[in-house]
Image (cartoon, rainbow, N blue to C red; front, side, top):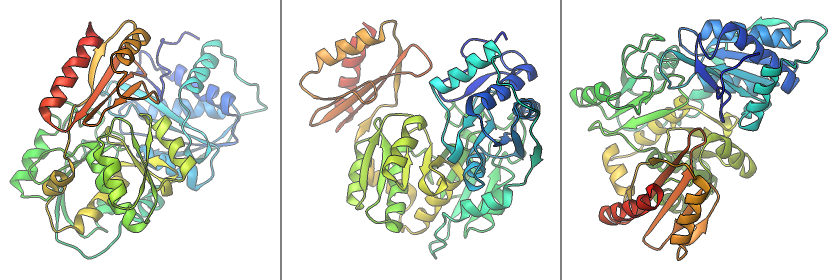
Length: 445
């Protein structure tokens, strides 16, 4: 079968509907998944995109034709699908979503049992099965079932709320016309906060804003609404709600590593001495705050394919990334935007300071956003960087990380493009900028 090169990516399968992904290809992916995993029972859900019901139906048709019993749970967030896999002991799961991509895109995230993600070479193996049409022979099609997971999932999300008495708060939530919408009202009704929603009509065209909250201008409306209503905090989700972002009372976005540190404090109140995982491009403030709160910080390579195994290995109660993904031991080690929101609001509810002040107290270093550079010879460039910074402490967990007393940097290859990504942190903005420019001169020649 002819398949567009590159749709079988490191973390998922993704392409443009009607071009890279068609009903025929989706059916073949379902059948290839059944061939690869050889499961007995699989669960499938989909996001709010206009093409998602058709893609999901074709995918499930392929799974069923591969001899697998398939349960359809319909319109759900990505982490509700992960929850269904773990809660009901399915052998695997398939979530139809293109996450934060534009409306014309779609894709599939695949898992094993216990919501363990299928990534990297495994995705590429499934792609080769599709291309070669080397499907396993079966005696007959599997059964097709359906199930409503909503009530159980909502109860799961709410189980992460502390329900303690605290200060009165007002919350503004930008749902982005996304998949979180069917679940938000029932969850917020059980929390002790006044709230209002924005872009609360599910719509795969995403008319309210870009489905990626990090896109330029995407959160302008939420920022204005926070200020206009004197809200205490703003919340934004991406299209499939596996990522979540906080904005403070001034409408300023809280960086993902800063929020990781704040959420870690909440978990360490409830689980003293627990392990917390953070990724290696996070500010050094994160492990420092975890240690202050009595926890055990563990550093991981970037991406959920690394975070989840690191958490399972150490039974970490919580993990967080700059990108807005937050992972929870008691949610099958899966990432969940809604659980992150509930935990974050529970933490803020117990504080006598506004969110901006809590951030200012711990966000003490100057840190770049990742700076991307197109590079033809990635191994050669990394070798030059190592040679130039032999005086620091070297770590090659994910690219090249070099630490000095007053500053550090990481340069890592992109998983999907011929890019190097640079992160630099220092004690002062001037030092950070000087070191950033110095390393970029090596990277860019």
